[in-house]
Image (cartoon, rainbow, N blue to C red):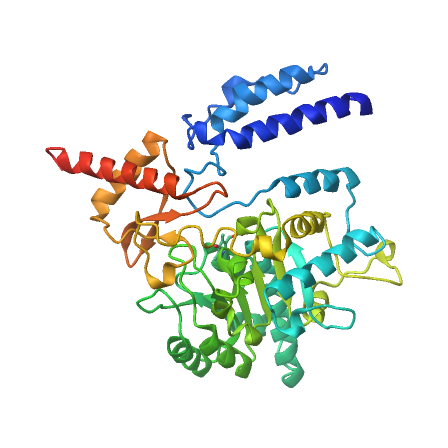
Length: 458
Ligand SMILES: *Cc1c(COP(=O)(O)O)cnc(C)c1O
């Protein structure tokens, strides 16, 4: 493909994408295919001779689209939102074209510098404490990660490194292996599974703190565990708090947890992957109170903030903690203006989106749309649009209902576990979802429930 053909095909692709997104509502949100469906539709080997572009595009419709779960359909209520917007898509294209690999400042100065500045912009939108802002002289700052899971892993590893150094400083006779075997991390029993996985990868023990009636962790429970573990000779080193848990959007009480962590030299990381975007709105910002105690904080603009995957933003209080834990300096990376490793030019997406919408445009673009919508019941901690219908039936009914919903392919939901119950979970995801879609979804769920209840052997 030469530049001339690229120009033509590029226009066609933009058209294809705009049509796809504009008419996505007409597609069944969930695909009607069985596992392994794709293999039989394409050859078993890559083509020896070049294929023709038109055939490739035809195959997108024949092979790919039938197997796509349409995350941007207004009837998609599963998992969590995946953000998208036209400015972000355009910026992504430019990112691909520049195609730099920004592992150091010299590898592409604009890539490294824009990322730092964009994380400052966003940090200021969230009104983060000053120590998270890099500015020109700050010790903290932000960096883009691919996922929240990665941010948790990176901070856990940095915390582990810091803890080993701290213990060794006062007990030089202790070996690293000995210290590592005593380290213990904590998180809520409602935390995302990636926290436990990070501890597995990091080779550190992890304990799950029980939650209260609102599925949140408070200071008391944590303190109790901490005292027991310290008495048993363990070394607490890391706590991952969640603001907006995946199952029910619960908020751990970081104003209670933070001071405990600070006092005990425990690294407090805050995972706000889902809910974090809301904190740019002044009315939701109080949910972030206590952030001043955190060593690191992460959320995913690729969930709610109009920036398409991947863009997970992470801030640390002390950059040195991260850089120090992972420092590698082969000669080919040495440069007098050394900076920590950055990757793709993902900050372009942030820059385009922030400028095209402005802070005001981003404020509550979505957050307010569903207030006073009669179709669902929301409880206090679920104000950020993960809804657990209060009218839930037995586990058996819910499981059956979910099967029917999935089979109908009109809307898409996933369940969650709460206090041993199988609960249907309804998350507002697509940018284009409005009250009409929610009411339609609710009618659909009610209708299916009614049908099940009418069945003789129910
Ligand atoms: C979505 C979510 C995650 C996982 O995010 P990834 O970026 O996919 O790793 C982790 N924690 C919470 C609270 C989430 O909502």
